[in-house]
Image (cartoon, rainbow, N blue to C red):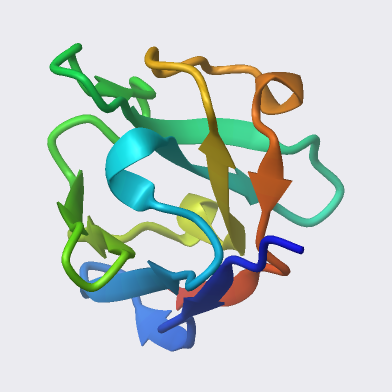
Amino acid sequence: QVQLVESGGRLVQAGGSLRLSCATSELTMSRHTMGWFRQGPGKEREFVVGSPWGGSETVYADYVKGRFTISRDNAKNTVYLQMNSLKPDDTAVYYCAARRGMLARTTAGDYDYWGQGTQVTVSS
């Protein structure tokens, strides 16, 4: 069974930075599109970023563009989400996801595997 394990979430002040990690030993990240989603209190789960494999363009949600950056270390089977200039509205549980397809889809239902999530809280 595929397990994605997120880490790095914590309480941070507005304007601060965090780096989330997502690691797995059960799938080959270099052959999967990796994504991050988030779910804030009382909100639906929403797309943050998708990093495709095979050379297609990384897709960011407008509300994180310029502040968040996804990166991969395929040798470590780990994907990272660098989050800068954090805002209270970024408070959410952040989920790592993987899909077998080569494109970065923005819909949660298009992803095959999910982590348990890591809590990010941004105080004002």
